[in-house]
Amino acid sequence: MSNVLEFLQQRNSSPKLTTPGPSDDDMEHIFRAALRAPDHAQLRPSRFITITQDRRAAFGILLEQCLLSRNPDADEATLSRARNSPLRAPLLVVVVVKITLHPKVPPIEQRFSGACAAQAVLLAAEASGFAGIWRTGAAAFDRAVMTGLGLAEDEEIIGFLYIGSRNGAAKVISPLDITQFVSTW
Ligand SMILES: Cc1cc2nc3c(=O)[nH]c(=O)nc-3n(C[C@H](O)[C@H](O)[C@H](O)COP(=O)(O)O)c2cc1C
Image: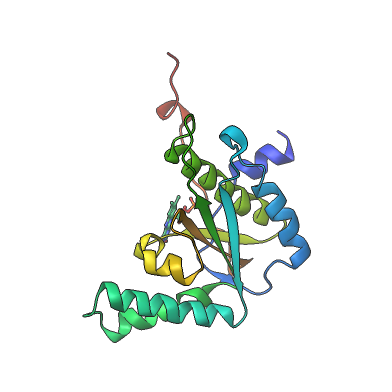
């Protein structure tokens, strides 16, 4: 089996991440890979927002404020979890899609393309020696969070990718029986 196939079969999210995160040069390669996501009619729906260093704390405050607007009864533990959540990795990449009205490319296909780009970021980050995890939650669907991140009305969040160095051992991937997932028609 080729190294690439072996790598693809072992891809593994990491909820526990630490420094170092990828360099700007690493990220350039990672984003070039992400921009190779399938893209019907070349609409270029995806863009990426990076959040690092002390901007993570600023983003945490935005998440906390938006959570409080969604749920004015949220307790301090919940608010603190939201505020600190961006500090779980040295780098966050927000994957954004712009939905364009197009006669042949419905919005769902543009979201699919954004999801492929998100997966490509994770794969390319892992191929560069890092690790990551795709997270969403209510914040990803909250227009106030989107506005705080500078998204336009026709843009949406596909996911928050947390990226850094794997903290601890990668989890063991149990082999699946592919016959349960694949059939011939
Ligand atoms: C669209 C999407 C949203 C997700 N949101 C979350 C999330 O908010 N929190 C979380 O812990 N995992 C979330 N996950 C799952 C993780 O990214 C990851 O796939 C899961 O922990 C399993 O690990 P694995 O990718 O190594 O199989 C999400 C996955 C997808 C595709």
